[in-house]
Amino acid sequence: MSNRAQVRNSPIDISRRRFIAGTGSLLGAAALTGHATAARAAAVPAAAPIASGAHVPVLVIGTGYGGAVAALRLAQAGVDVHMVEMGMAWDTPGSDGKIFCNTREPDYRSYWLRTRTKAPLNYFLGFPIDRDIPRHTGILDAEEFGGITVYQGRGVGGGSLVNGGMAVTPRRENFGAVLPSVNADEMYGVYYPRANAELGVGTVDPAWFDSTACYQYARVGRKHAQRSGFPFVFVPDVYDWDYMEQEAAGTVPKSALAGEILYGNNHGKKSLQQTYLARARATGRVAVSPLHRVTSVSPAGGRYAVAIEQLDTGGGVTATKTVTADRVFFAAGSVGTSKLLVKLKATGALPGLNDEVGRGWGDNGNVMCGRANHMWDATGKLQSSIPCCGIDNWAAGGAFAEVAPLPTGIETYASFYLSITNNPNRARFSWNAATGRVDLDWQASWKQPSITMAKTIFDKINAKEGTIYRTDLFGVYKIWGDHLTYHPLGGAVLNRATDNYGRLTAYPGLYVIDGALIPGNTTVNPFVTVTALAERNIERIIAADL
Ligand code: FAE
Image (cartoon, rainbow, N blue to C red; front, side, top):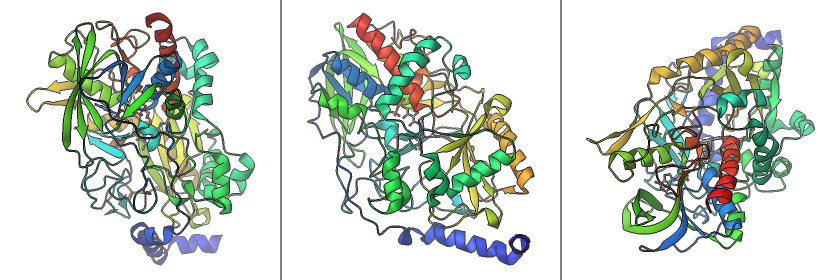
């Protein structure tokens, strides 16, 4: 070991490591494929799009977690629902036989209406790794506001199409700070268990975790966390763990083990297409219009008129439609719902919305970083793209760090982390009449509390291990990925912008049922909380309002 330590410290070794890593980063894609590529069967078949002039009992804007819960429960209660989704259906394979592309070879399917990728981890060894792509209604939106880039899923299934599937229920003692007006006993007794069951949440088999090559990076993460005295936890996920074991055994087409995650998983992951939305469609009462974007909702004779733009895959508007609905559920995600409501209030379509609309937006304290390991702590060239563990320093330091993969296909000697921190900063959406757009007043400097909290973990680990931060993953000499979030939350906060069940009370029949309800932070990854809260709210709405 001492020999290897000496080798590691030599300039020759550093440049060798850089060469290996750089080669893999830039050229690795060519060596990474070659496995079977059977396309995933579509669980949610395409539907005839909604016709202009149509009337529907319930219209749901967006097909993410909140929208999917609303659609399923309303349909089960006997109500016909139409879901309107600005993104694509993601049910048709491309010419390569796959519905989704992988992170190593992003193509036209990867980004929402961009001509160049905007990878969250956008540098390697200080070199930019983004590449040109054709402009297309791709799956991942990197939406840029003044001080932050907000990543979101676009398509039938919303964020479930692009996320890591980490399905985490907050610790009970933290729940009061997450949703202070909600009865915790009900959430932990009924709605969290219901959400976990419907989403198909499971945990990696610890024995397999200990033996498989694809979680070597996570075992290194565990060792370093434990040696510094931090609690290490397995994190549940909606990925099918049996399927992943078969991937490792080479008996099924690979997805998590083939770098698939940010731009969709062709196999293995139970996205909403396989769970809530499949069950909703099976009721026969739920229809979906993909590539349809809602632009306005306004009262119309006891109903609501909903203006919709139909899009082509280049983002062009091919038709404008107006439909009516008795009830409308805003489920366009924290950013989508907030932008719509702020615009509709300011432009006079829904002037009675209260002044809390647009407020209370947070980034769930997201911040990323990497650590450079010693050569005896190789993290493995085969890395499952599905994270399965984390370091819980919330109580002591305000940070929960997931041990994240760097699935480049080559050895990087890097440990990579996405931290969720207790960042108190909250931003506000507001209408900009000059540009005709909605702005968000988040400031880049507002990430500093997140960095400080993440450092409570990684400064200690670095000191213990004699290691340093990677400075080449987010810029030329930049340690922190502090320019982005994967977890937008808030903007139409429960019990403030809405009543305690998501009703926009000035307008009977209008509801918010997505991440916009949650005031900025969930202490862990958010979608289980978004789902459980939607389950709680829709149960009350069906019982009381319908
Ligand atoms: P969301 O799922 O975003 O759905 C909103 C839908 O509305 C989208 O499909 C939009 O395209 C659509 N939409 C927006 N505007 C309109 C409009 N005007 N007209 C029609 N449709 C519209 O909202 N969370 C976790 O818990 N665990 C993870 O491992 C995790 N990893 C993530 C990784 C990435 C890269 C990203 C981007 C997110 C991740 N998240 C994760 C966050 C999670 O996906 C997110 O909290 C939920 O998707 C939010 O659910 P909503 O229902 O609020």
